Image (tube, rainbow, N blue to C red):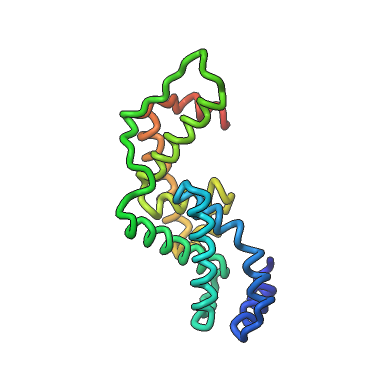
Length: 192
């Protein structure tokens, strides 16, 4: 959706046009769901929190003011707050496992799907140990495929700050994965 169309729909939705808000919802619900799902690692909870994000957005729409950022930036802020609130209420982090206690056992008898599931579990645990900003940058960059400049606008930071944040996040993630038994060099050669 282009910016002019988005602004037009926002104005209509702020005047009470339910169809305009529904169009915005359809445009962004999957993006917000994916973001939340990567933060909570539970599809049912992600659906509930995504619904809560759009409920909060609808409730606050009359107070929303365009600050030159895409509407989805505001939705990401609400989503981030809902995830944080969820973990405060449950008084825990997404995955509280010690990565060193869960080495990835490579057995020639294991089938590939089991290895992928174990690797995904360890990767999620490693990502969960990053700061909220680092998690957000990695999700926006590598899951959502956003460019650095777009992430900077969404997070209200300068592009160089996003690059530095991404670099620190990737370094921290690589360190955690190496301690968990992943061969980082092999992974890098696979994705290059």
